[in-house]
Image 1 (cartoon, helix red, strand yellow):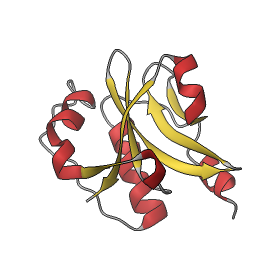
Image 2: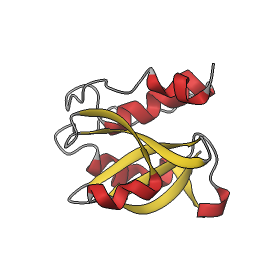
Image 3: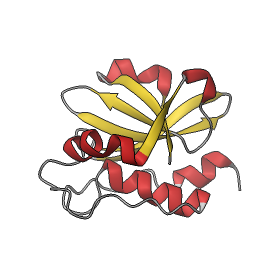
Image 4: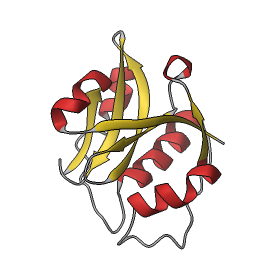
Length: 129
């Protein structure tokens, strides 16, 4: 199955602040596509998540990497009016981010280069621990 086809299985899933936010998608992708078990803190307050959870547990979840080091499955922290997490994939010659956005209503696949047009700015790249 092509990478794009594989990722399109997730595109369109609805954002749900109580059960499926951007962090939940990132964890799901690690499990489904990379066989990794990532555990987000169970006590994270959903009302504050994902921003508070990501900020608070950043060191536990992953380590910073440089742009030239990214590979499929790494994550990007994105800033706007909030902190947001997405998973990186190289698709058709470009780096893309698969993310679940409250403001967009669900899961989308965007080229990294298109994020500024959506008022989304890269805070940094990370590799899961």
